[in-house]
Length: 87
Image (cartoon, rainbow, N blue to C red; front, side):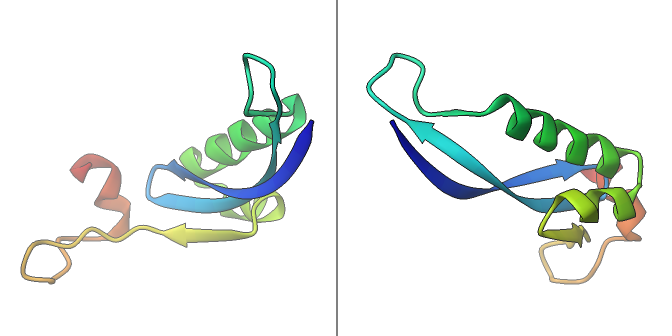
């Protein structure tokens, strides 16, 4: 069994986050997989982002980003809060 750290990107509403987790690799039929704790951590970050709780998400994630939509010309199409409706 080999354990490898990776960064997963999680999106929720107008935010995204980088979350450090570990991937378990092995010969088994279900590999690679996350630990249950890391799977819950990803869910917790996603729930915090969807609820707009950036402070909670930042405690669990390495970085939190606010997403801003742009149009083809490179101009912003609206406020960052409008991202969820535009996607």
